[in-house]
Image (cartoon, rainbow, N blue to C red):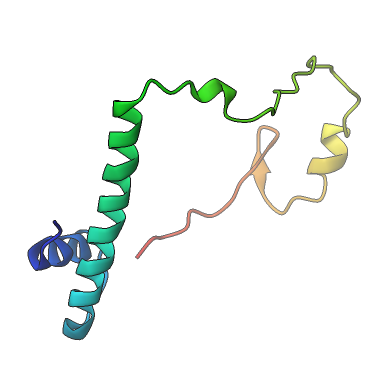
Length: 95
């Protein structure tokens, strides 16, 4: 069961603002989600299920083949900055 304190802690850790009137609904929703996950988990533990045969999708593997590519100098000639054959971009500051 998810508690009010759990929701407040999750909100603080994720830096989300939660209104007081939303906490009850979020608590209910999170409890339902966790209950659903527990139901699935217990069903998997109770039965010996082979997940390989759930559907008929087959992995389509292919050989790695080297193909012609663009000329490196042609691509890099229009760059606005860079060095040693690489693009240089500004580091984005995260708030």
